[in-house]
Length: 96
Image 1 (cartoon, rainbow, N blue to C red):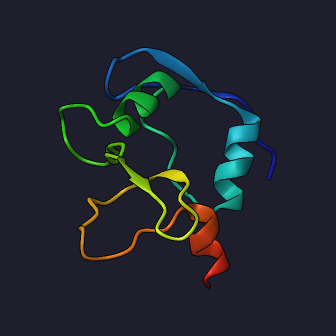
Image 2: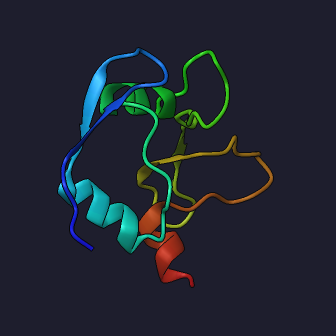
């Protein structure tokens, strides 16, 4: 199928944006049949976790720990409890 650049209007901000040939090819390769409804800045803002809810991603809180195995400083995405050992990434990877 021959693609051409298409001008679309963003559903959020109303600005015109270009749906390029390479983007159309990418969409087709992923099996996506609908055209995008938002421009790149609005898509990125929506992914960034605005106050509107939906598909936003929030960065996890990281906790500073000392590896129980090697003693190295590390960060983990869960609150460690004092009764269980916590491993750094390297020691965890080596244990499995």
